[in-house]
Image (cartoon, rainbow, N blue to C red; front, side):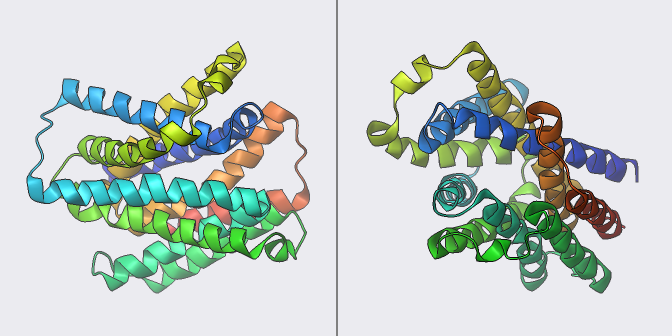
Length: 289
């Protein structure tokens, strides 16, 4: 029970980090291209995670698990990040923010289908309610938000959501054999190696040279907290409390992002965001029981 409470607290912390990271990445995109942001964050983050693994535990992994970890990295780091970034290019951030949060619904059904977890009716209701809470919070009263933007962006956002669900689900059998740190480090490294294929064409060191001190501080936060710490805590929660209960905390990310935008960027909060936030936290509470 104590482990469960610790996992819940750590997942709320992850939600706060990823919510603040949305504001941080939005700031970085004023100076860096989307692919430059992805490359610098994930390549550097994967190196740091692997160095941490070297100091803490044995790095040996059986060959039969190596390809699974590589597949995990390709799905959750390379493909997901590219789909997510280009979804933002083709459609509105509101549209992407709503559709990306369908992953707990996908995750619940897929984990049940694959036999990892029983998808209880009460938890299904809580997950669907949480999604509507996200919709209310992100749309801010604009009920036609999902119709905005290019169809390509909508499709890419839906695919990104599906790949994030797969990324979390496919980690389950690996976490039964390896530590959360090892699974995080190896999958991140594999995904970053694939991202490295884009470096010769898309990486622009001149953009990084022009970053201000504030920009570099934001980069450091985005790497250390949203990648190294948050990804490790996410996988540890999957190992301890299960897939569905972990994934429902993703709904807290847009609420945390709205709060971060309010405190950091001075953006206003309206009644729809407050109502959506309440629905989200009630749904998370119900889903975790």
